[in-house]
Amino acid sequence: MGRHPCCTEQKVRKGLWSPEEDEKLYNHITRFGLERCGKSCRLRWINYLRPDLKRGNLSQQEEDLIMSLHKVLGNRWSQIAAQLPGRTDNEIKNFWNSSLKKKLKQRGINPITHKQLRETGAQGEMPRPAVKPIFNPFPSFECQAATDPTGTNANLYHQLQQTYRPLEQNEFMKNFDNNLVSRSSSGYWNYGEVLNVSDTYAIQESLNGSIDWNCGIAAQMDSMLGKEVLGWSSLEIKLESSLQTEIKTYHQRLNPCQGLQHVESSEEFSSYLTTSLSQDLSDACLDVSQDELARELNGNLLSS
DNA sequence: AACACGGGCAACCGCACAGAC
DNA sequence: GGTCTGTGCGGTTGCCCGTGT
Image (tube, rainbow, N blue to C red):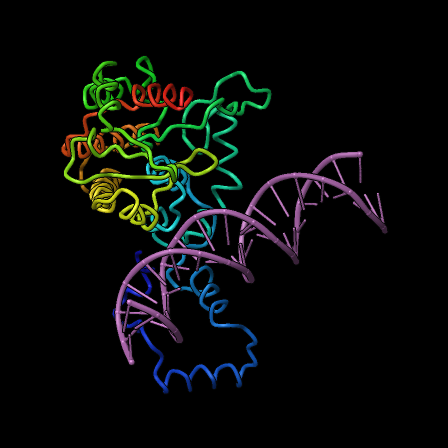
């Protein structure tokens, strides 16, 4: 778990409180009559009083960046906030819940998956699936662009098509029959033998069908599966370090002083970001089709 | 003017993690 | 290895304010 940027600054102490610090705090509270707990004070400082905070509304550029980052990171507000200097995770979370979410819905886009909503629902909501949703090894790429070969991100679509080679029907069934794709009694899918990577990856679906990326939960699988499970964190680290690089490059492109190409829109950035990340992930030789896997596993779930 | 309602936002809550002891 | 403390994080709650009736 990362620390808040303020604690990485050299002049900010961390760890146990010294008697001198206790005395200073005590004096402040007794002198000014502050009746707040430490946690509340900390929150107030982080979200409101910190001198490096930006005031005022978020710019269109910031909004675009949040949108793009959410597509990749999901509700990891602190990580999103880390890319927006002077903005807090709380501010971004509130902005997302009160504004951006609605905007996406109005555009017919599911704010959780960033996929186009079907036109069947009365309120434009996705109908609940008849069976429990299937684990998707690449939730980050469930963007509209990847499913629309005729859209503005056609290049991305074709790249993803090439990067993630579909498994043939019999190839999948062979894997399933040989227990290379398996599911534990606790609801974990294990793709370790199918994904051609050094570690075995595991993940849990939450009740609402979203994916639980928590490494801590995945770590609990050690005992269940009887073997070392977690390379998940290493994948996450790889993904995030890739993301850091892309963000840096994005900022460079946004800065005309550096004489680099200008990014025109959030769509362009999304495409750019996702394309770059897909290249990084393809380096990990992930060789599986999510759609094929989902279809087949759904079928097996129904028949079991 | 009074009330209901909804949106925006700050603050709170509970959990998890890391490090010290 | 267990416990305690400090900290980070995301979901949720509740207050304030504007708007509509």
